[in-house]
Image (cartoon, rainbow, N blue to C red; front, side, top):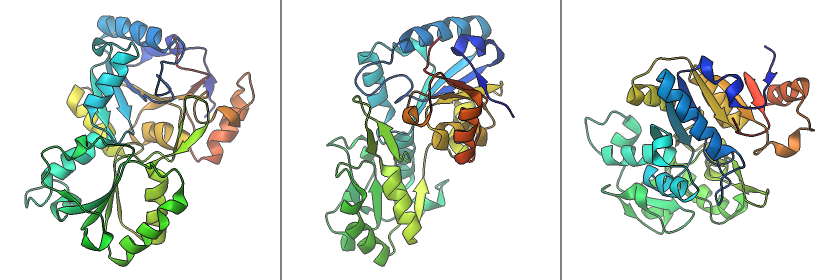
Length: 292
């Protein structure tokens, strides 16, 4: 399958009735919107009003959807520009609300005890709201690990805790499966998925949420009540593009995100294909940035 290089979303948007769009690295850098991104969303919304297409924002964020609403609005992405926000943190929250219930849909949470050791970015504990759980400081007192952030910044800082957790047989739930994210200055920062992947490699049991798991795409289709042809848009080959494939969507790879230093400019289809093949996945389209 050849990869088509496009200048912007307008080149292919008419073909789709569902758009699943990443946030960080596509719409914004965590502080400000990327050039052209707000306009692209406005144009996409105008098209959807004519065609009935649905627009979902899907983020591997360890926070709940309310945090996305606030951040997006502050950067100029009005709430009426999209139909739905889904975050991996919100999925963990839903799981924790099922915890210990015999009728829980997810056996991982059904069987989970109430005490946990948490890895965080900051003081935001929104994913714990109304969940009957208790954060403890010692691994030996815990029933599970909640991996939502990596404020320590490097993997070695977590290894002693992971070794103790493994010795205790603790499962881990990962609220953000991303390995890295692009910071406003262009550098890459380690994300919780790196810690969870290390724990899994050690032999630990990890409950993953978000991209690239199929379940999150099924959830989006169910909540938006659509089986229309869709396209997933993101800057991570491993998460956004692989997730689109798993979810039965075409995909638009935004090359100016976490893979910005992996490709020469201007974009060349053969080079993009070689990079994608090295990650075991191929996008349908590629563009330098999210623009109309």
